[in-house]
Length: 85
Image (cartoon, rainbow, N blue to C red):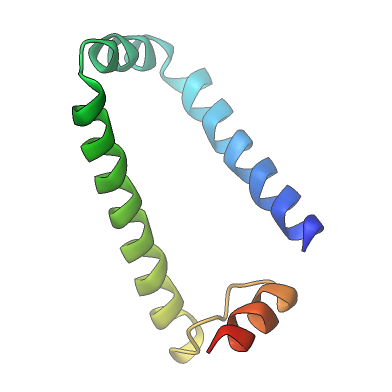
């Protein structure tokens, strides 16, 4: 489980680094705009992105490899999720 978490964290950092390297001015403008928002507005934006990402992941999981539902997950994650249901 720790290896999977570290793998995910590494991929997230990789994606963030690529975005920062490709669009530094755009990231700066976006951060300036975020600084002007109130905490409740930032919460709504964060929750919106979370829901959107969860929906995309569910759709990808359903479509990938014939609708297995967990076809892209690591084996330990599959066992954990299977144990929950």
